[in-house]
Length: 237
Ligand code: SAM
Image 1 (cartoon, rainbow, N blue to C red):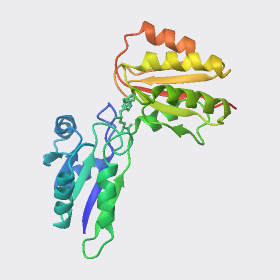
Image 2 (cartoon, helix red, strand yellow):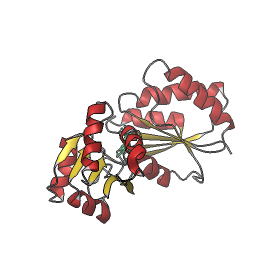
Image 3 (cartoon, rainbow, N blue to C red):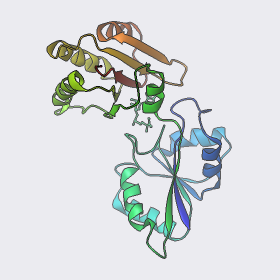
């Protein structure tokens, strides 16, 4: 039976990889990568010589068919993204969906096996200090047209939601996003809501900003804004 392993990889610190992930990456016939150059750094670090093939969100159906053919031939494959868990704001779902159609069909028998590990969303959630029994994860805010509506809805929901909201943001938009959120806080009367912004988790310049949004904005403005961000907004309780 062929297996497609969905393998989580580090979100910065290359030591954050599981023994099982290393074993799988070493033993599969081929690793499907979002960007082969990024994954190659990880493979070099651990002396893994497995061949790689690029697979991303815009990969053509032809590529998915090619991957399916490999599995049909009994090859074992691993799917990784540039960082973290595939499928979480990253490529993977389309491929998994297609493979799943065939997964249980005799005589093909393809297994889809998760190899869990880091993700920016759970890493940030773990240090937020907010009650995290449940939370709402929204991925990336839309970049253009739907953006205004996204933040309006988020602020309205925050006023009612009883759980924290987590989203990803790029270094180019982090301040714009926090300022947009700040102006909506007044409108929805949620100025007292705390926020945690995690920058460059597990990396050299890891920084956690905590407190009221205006304070966090000032601190981020003072620092050189570089790197990747996760934002966690406290739920009203
Ligand atoms: N699949 C990944 C995961 O499991 O976290 C997420 C991929 S998404 C394309 C990339 C976004 O995740 C970044 O823009 C940032 O918002 C967040 N992210 C990834 N690594 C991070 C890190 N080390 N520190 C903070 N945020 C990070």
